Image 1 (cartoon, rainbow, N blue to C red):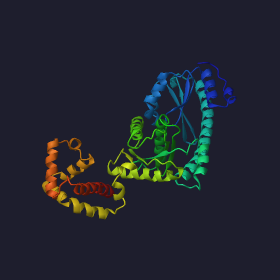
Image 2: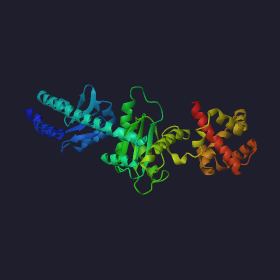
Image 3: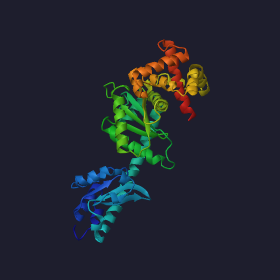
Length: 394
C-alpha cells in the first residue's frame, strides 16, 4: 500500500464508484460494497473471484455478522443511526492495515454512509408512490382501465397484457419484531430469481404477504403447466439460498386479461395459498384452478362439516378406534392419489394387493361400493372436509 493518502480527493468526486476507485488507487487494494442482504452492489475491477466466492458461500455468516468467518478480508459496517446499509469489503487482513490506512478507510466509510443513505431515501420515496399505485390496481380503486394502463406505463408495466397474480405467505407466525426484516429478505430473494426468468416482474409487500405480478409471456402458461413448474423450481432455489427463512407457501390466481380483474386474481391467489394448507400445511404450491371442492367446503360452518363427516364416515372412524386400524387414513390416501392404487400404496408403504384388501374391507364396513360414482363422490368430499376440520381445530 502507499504510504501517504489524500483524503481530500474523496470530496472531489460525487458517486460511490468514483470514491471507491480513488480509495482503491491510493490504498493499492481492491474494494467492494455489500448491501444488507449480502449482495455485491459495487466493486473495483480487480477484486478477486476468490473473495467474491467467499462472500457468496458464507452469506449467512455475513448476515449474522460473524466477521471471523472471512480470513484475509476486512469488513467495515456501513450504517446511519443504527440502520444497516451493508458492509465495505477490503481485500486485505485487518491486522495488515496501518493506523493511517485505517483512518483513510474511516473517511471512506463516512462518505459511503451518506451516499448509500441518500440512495435508500430516494428508493423509499419511489417505492411509496409505486406501492400506492399497485394498491389501487389490486383493489380496483380506479374508474377506468385506460387510466391504470396509462399510469402503469410510468412504472414500466404493460397492463394491456394478461397478468398472473401470486401470493407468497409464511406458513406460521413470524418472530415478534422480525416480521419486516424477514419479509424484506423474502422479497429480495424472490426478486432475484423472478428477474432472471420473467420480463419486469412486480413484487409488493401487502398484509404481511408478498404479492407478485407476472405479465403473461404469450405462451399461454397455465398454472398446471410451465408456470407452476417454474414457480416450484424457484421455491426450491429460494430455500436453498436462504435456508433460515421460515416455511412459506405460494398461491396462484387465475390469469385475467383486463386490469380491472387483477383484484379478483389477487383474492383467488390468497384463497389458494390458504386452502392449499389443507392439503400441504407447509411449503406448498396451490393454483386456484386446482382447489376443486375445497372452494365450496371452505364456506360451510365447521359444525356442519363435522356432522357430514360423522354421517358419512362415522362407522369407519368407530371401527378404527375399536380395532386400532387405519382404514380412514387408507381411504384419505386413496383419494389424495387420485384413486391410483400404485401411488396410494407407495404413499402408505404397503403392497398394492394389501391396499386392495383394505379397500374391500372399507366398503364392507361402510356398506357401499366405491365403484359407484355417487358413493365415491360422497366419501371423497367427506375426506376433503376432514382436512378443513383438522386445520380449523389446530
